[in-house]
Image (cartoon, rainbow, N blue to C red):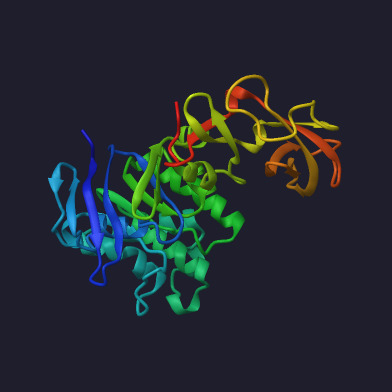
Length: 348
C-alpha cells in the first residue's frame, strides 16, 4: 500500500493561474521521490499542498492511509526544509535545530545530544551559539536541513534544500541526505530543477511540466526511456539530440539519440547519408563540421553542424577530432528513440 497518495490533485489561484492541473502519483514507505522540472512547472506548489501550506482546489492527499487534504501542517507530522531557510531569527543555531524536538516534548538531555550529533554530521558544531543573521546563506540552509532531519516525522518535504551551496558542499550534502534517509527509512518528497541532483538522489523521479506530470520512473527509466520529447530534452546534460524523420506508414516522427550514443568518424558520410536519417533501416549517418568542442576532463562534447541541425556527440577526452574538422556521425538504431512529432509522446 502506498504511504503517500496524490489523486487528481489541482491548484488554481484566485487570479486564474492553474499551477497544478490534476496529478496522480504515489510513494511507498521509505521511498525517495524527486519532483523535477523547470521553474513554474508546479513542483513547489505540489510540495506545499502535501505540507498543508496550500489548500488544493481539487483532489485528495493521503498520508499513511489517512486523508490529510484539509488538515493543517501541525496535524500532518511533516519535516519541511524550505528553499529560503525560514529560521527563527531570535534563536541560536542550537535552539533552531532543537525547536521541533522541544515541541515534541523530548527531554532536555536527549535534545542536547541529538542537536550535537546532527551538528557534528553537518559541520555546524562551531556555529551552535550563533544566530541566523551571523551566518552565510549556505550555513543557514544547513541549519534548516538539520532542523528538519533531527527527528523522524512521517515524511520529509524538501524544497531545493541544497540550492545555495557550492558544488563541493552540495555533493557532500547529497551523500549525507541519502545516507540519513536510507537509515531512517523516512519517505521523502524532494523538489529540484537540477536533473543531476535528481538522478543522484532519487529512487523515482516525477518529471513535471506546466502543472502536469510528464513521466514517473527510476532515474534509469527516465534517462534511457523518456516518455516525451520534453523529458528527453530536459533530462541529460546535454539532453537528447533530435532529428526529423519519417516512419513508413505512420507519417512524421522525431528521432532522439543521446550524445554518448553518437559515433564520430573522420571524413564525410557515405553517399545518400548527407541529410536526415530515416526512422527505420540501416545505420543512420550524417556529415558535418565540428563548431564547438567542450572539454569536461573525462570527456568532450563535440557540437557538429549538419544539414539536419547541430548535433552533440560525447567522445573520449583524448579523441583526435578537433574544432573545424569534417566528421561523419553514426547512430546505433538500437539507441534511437522515436516520438510522435504532433503529440511529443514516445512511440513503441
